[in-house]
Length: 197
Image 1 (cartoon, helix red, strand yellow):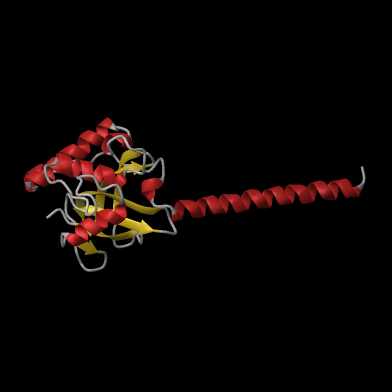
Image 2 (cartoon, helix red, strand yellow; image 1 turned 180 degrees about the vertical axis):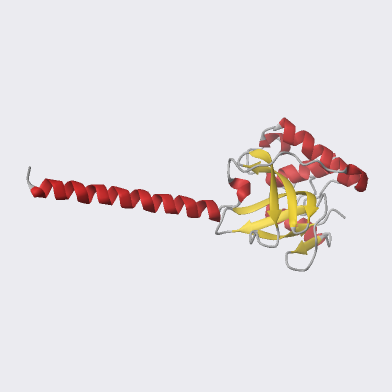
């Protein structure tokens, strides 16, 4: 056997090893770059929430979130049958069912299908708290996310708060209703909160 084919096979094996190593590093970097709410395996069980310390509306929101987390209905259930990204529809539906409906600033409907419009609603109500102003979220507040370099706009609910970490529940997180832990001080996708009151 000549030295030329052996050298070619070694170069080919080295090239394949290099490509596999680069892909592995890229996949690892992607996991650091993508917020945990979008990873299929990163979800927590629904938290145990002491409802005695909550207002009636906060308790209703937590009850509804727990029920819907268990039910895992499709997104169209929360959006009047419309097939679209449904995280804001989920927020709108929960608020309506809790007896504190939102009002779309463009149509007057209870349903606000987009995160940008959801932010407009909270701003128009004087209930928008931008990140960095010192506001500490409470149960029933809505987290608003926007990061064009990650996965765009998103929204979910604050269920509990412990220090600088909130437990959140949201719809359309990998197509499901999921529970996550959020450090709002370090997650650069968080732009603010819609206050419940």
